Amino acid sequence: GNSVTQMEGPVTLSEEAFLTINCTYTATGYPSLFWYVQYPGEGLQLLLKATKADDKGSNKGFEATYRKETTSFHLEKGSVQVSDSAVYFCALTPLNAGNNRKLIWGLGTSLAVNP
Amino acid sequence: EAGVAQSPRYKIIEKRQSVAFWCNPISGHATLYWYQQILGQGPKLLIQFQNNGVVDDSQLPKDRFSAERLKGVDSTLKIQPAKLEDSAVYLCASSLGVGYLNTEAFFGQGTRLTVV
Image (cartoon, rainbow over all chains, first blue to last red; front, side, top):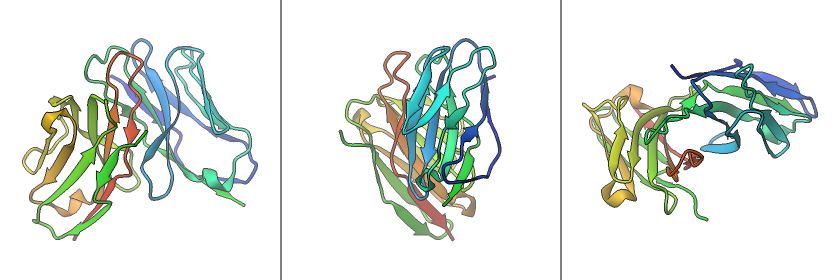
């Protein structure tokens, strides 16, 4: 079946540190891959996405590359800020979803950035 | 472009009472989702609509939860009667739902329900 596995948190970093949050997936074919972010007390926001192999999604300094060979979509940022403190969710939508375009979610990784 | 609107933002009720949540998706979005997010966990899909038809309600506790999407636009989610374990944030999301690439979901701010 389809599934998403994220590294467990919480992750605690100092400001300007390099961030990696690992995400691997299991799915047939070429799913669409997403990173969502949830800031404290707010709803989920799409951070970035990729829809085919070797695509790189990027937004707000974050990047993730769709790696078919390793079935991964790791989230990276070169220099984190305090304002990046949030919970990050990796998710996928299977290729042959038809009308049922259900998002398959990871469990989320909490990031805390200290000044 | 207006986002997904939800109300209320917060609700506190006693167990065995009923409660309803409202969602107005982004204009033109055919697909609407209701998720339950318990503190510290990822979202759990409760029900998915395509226009005004139900596509997936396999994880909806149908003995107490119900949802409708009249005219394929606004949607309401109801819990009757509520249990303590229903305390969670209820998220509504919508997506274009047309074609393979249009699977991006946009979320509302959610309704935080506390059952006491």
